[in-house]
Length: 111
Image (cartoon, rainbow, N blue to C red; front, side, top):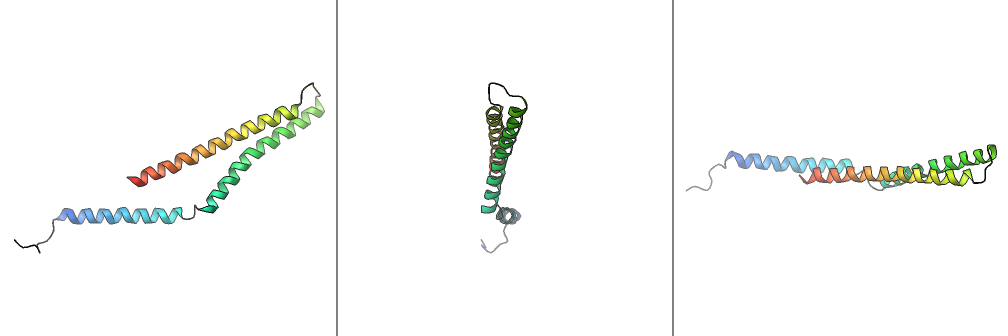
C-alpha cells in the first residue's frame, strides 16, 4: 500500500469547514472588541438615567401637586417613590434584555 495516495474529498471539506468556523469566530471577536469598558460604562449610564429620570419627574410633579392641591399626605413623597419604582423596573428590563442577548450570542457561538 502506498501512504502517499490522495486523501478522500471529505477531509478537504471538513478542513474547509473548520477554517470557516475559525474565521467566523475571529470576525465576531473583532466586532465585539469595541464592547469592552466603554460599552459597560455606557450601559451603566443608560441604566442610571432610566432610574433617575422617572424619579425626578415624579418628584417634580409631586411638588407641583403639593403646591396646587394641598392634602394631608405628601404628593412629592408618593410620586417620588412611584417614579423610583418605575425607574427600577425600567432598569431591570434593560439588564434582562442585555443578559438575554449576551446568552443568545454565547449559545450561537458555541454551535
